[in-house]
Length: 221
Length: 312
Image (cartoon, rainbow over all chains, first blue to last red; front, side, top):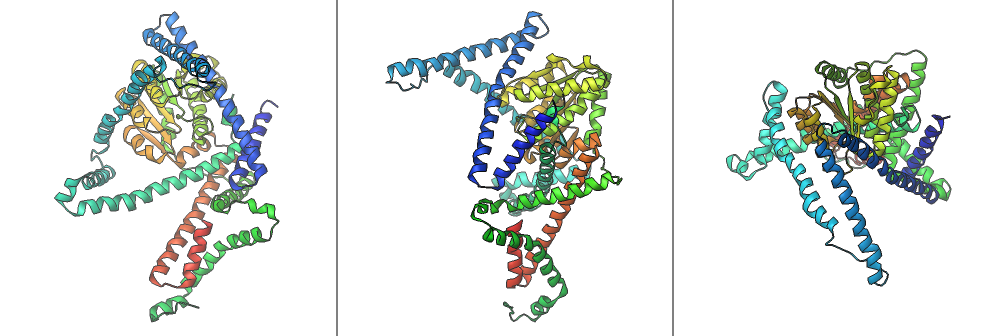
């Protein structure tokens, strides 16, 4: 029974989602939308589990003075500071704001939360993303080494595409822009579509296996 | 018959058996569309709520279901099915063995999407296998999650696999980590784990976006053996460039069948292959019709091509 009920629920919800996809019948759409809402609510509650996991693991490391406990302390301090700052912002906008703004929420843009979001969180996030530029160069350097026939073909294609995409390519030889366009439009698109068709069929197979209860990755315990 | 232009070669070719065979084949493919279209016209009003635009997906589902049922019965009757080798999956065991030899942990990431993504479910299937081998080898397994629901299910998966391997003590709750819901905060967290705890093997199986290369390059810098798998076409080149082994698209979804060898799951893989063959036939038919239309612009060929496009 412990296994059957979740399989039944997943099959029921999955079949309704499939029906919603193929049908525009209002009753089916209504039930499927309702089920989706339940999913969203359940998922949003689960954030508490994540926060508890973070606190449990990091607090234990700090208390026991484990290796790198300083980073973990910083993480906990940052998390609670942002949570408190977010709560204060909510209070200013929703409670205090309504008192002074004829019952309507008042947008506050100069709170501690906004300051930390704009001047700490956002630059840090952008910094991590910016690392990608350097990593692309280092990965390309390794991938383009002509070790065998395939790597050599990759190198030749990459050089043509890179040269053809910059103005100097056309200045060197007028055929470069056309050649890179041809590589991107035909061999590249054909290869990508082959992978996409295979992946799409794999998704259909995996989706049906999960809906029909043949595979139960969510029930491994 | 219209379109009998002045080209005698074209007229001869219109009568040619090959073109007629193609026409018959296309008509056979077009038949379901006509039947469905006619049904939609004669059926009661409430049946008109069927979204005809999604007919190709419906046909794929019906075909897959039919193939699967047939192959499943065949397997039950004793037919054996062979799966080709997947070096990416075979490499997982090597990667865990390497971690065991080095006395360092294995890091597993089941993608960055939530549990409603089919790639995450496929990744969790592979996690079960990885956790089982890691428990057998008595090697610590760290699982880093971006979503808390994925973390909860990962905990259950690893716990069950460790128990099945006869080493429940290998499940270490502190190694099941939720890092952050934010994409780049999660990436920074995983990079921190890679550089501080130095896992000997990093296994990425699931849905990844722009963080794929940041993770894989950091793993490379830390000296880990890396096995990746995703169906996100845009991220595959990054994984191929930076990882030792990569499961590409359909291989990633076939991994659970490859690992479990369960006949019910293996039958679905062969059914997917049959569906792919059916699509290949349709593609060949479309190419042939389009080429024939370009060479001999006949109204019949154009109609057949349009019908084919309508269905698929």
